[in-house]
Image (cartoon, rainbow, N blue to C red; front, side):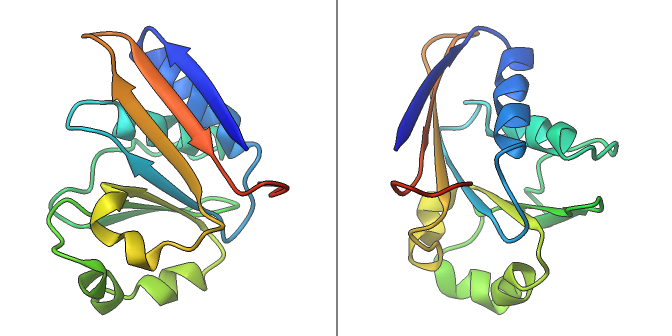
Length: 144
């Protein structure tokens, strides 16, 4: 199943993330794909807003993962500095999956082998300075 959305501002990209948050449950994985500056962090900010997380969301580039507590916690990963999925397992990937939060991974292509087929995949493509194409795909029949 695939959904395609076009946005023309950072706020609209966040709104797309907010909408998706309402469709996710504990244990969900959101794998984000897109070039530098595409809007992955803006999308995750929207996810956090949709989960009623009030804390400011920023890219975890240097910490690898930022944790945001809420009724459903959000674990925001940035895989850019990792070489492969083994490094993700080394930092406790399976422990995060067991914590019944939502795991959102930027630069997912670097750890594709660790992401299961049930993950929601979000590809954000920069069309120009303000416009984005967002493709959200998931397995057929998947509720989240």
